[in-house]
Image (cartoon, rainbow, N blue to C red; front, side, top):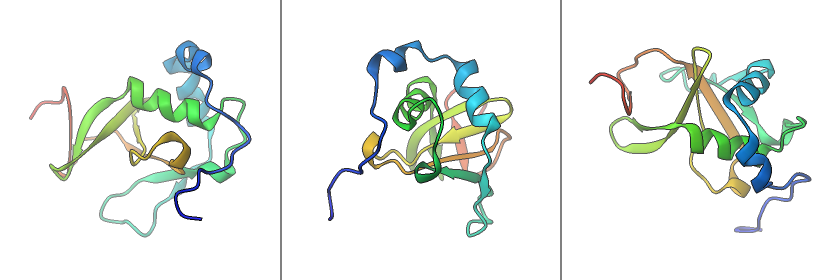
Length: 122
């Protein structure tokens, strides 16, 4: 069914989103097992999949937090998305609506030629 929303047992909780903090979300994401994206060696990164999410915090709230607390970044000078930094890592999603977001990505927060983040030296 194209266009049908994903069915998920957890729902977005606006009050919960406002109460989250960097340490909470950072600790949760740091403790996760991440899979290396071996099909993209040109842009080394890791990812986690929504279908494997079994955390106390709803997926949608974590994704929204990353977007709200993140900084603007430009991938290959053209694709703008939000990047969230914590503990030497950068986290991002591909920008789909919450109910369609299936992946959270991360990589090491080091300068790379294909990414510029707001506030970084040019």
